[in-house]
Length: 186
Image (cartoon, rainbow, N blue to C red; front, side, top):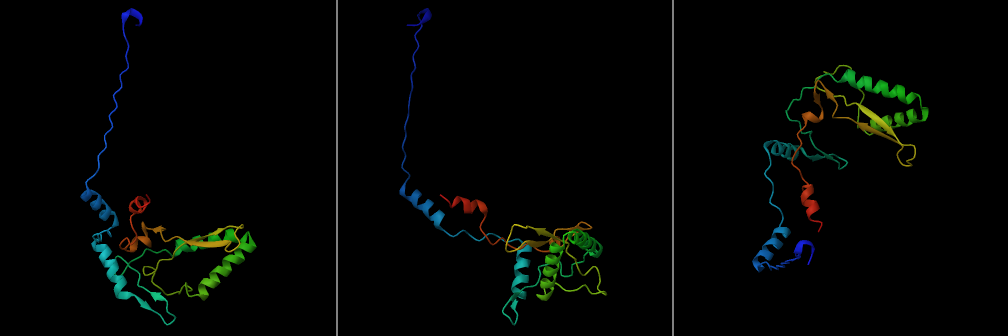
């Protein structure tokens, strides 16, 4: 008995319910997880990219694969990127000249790139709307033993609101969706 002749009581009700799923439901879930997912429906752009790939893949005399670039349009028309890329190179060169060892490594990289035919010297008589000069920058990490200098090309750089990446087809997604990958970790 408490104050004013009132009783207090604590009543708790606990309910425990256990359900066993039917065997067919368990089997259905098992096969749903184990089945190879159905191929996703490709967009027309994905199909075009795949067709360009299949029609243009080849091997050179050394055995390297060669594939045509998957442009959105057959004849991409670029804005004049010469001036912008040249200003980037000159700015980078001025910065690198302050550190002679870094400038030497950068020059060696460019020479190696030229020797591997990954780039060529700019011809004087080329139409500026047929080429896109990609600005680049270099990242220097003095603590790294293998590659202290790394050159990064910026194909997302826009000239008149169009970048080189904007002119390419993306193509179909070949890997699984990240959510699907993470759900497999149980």
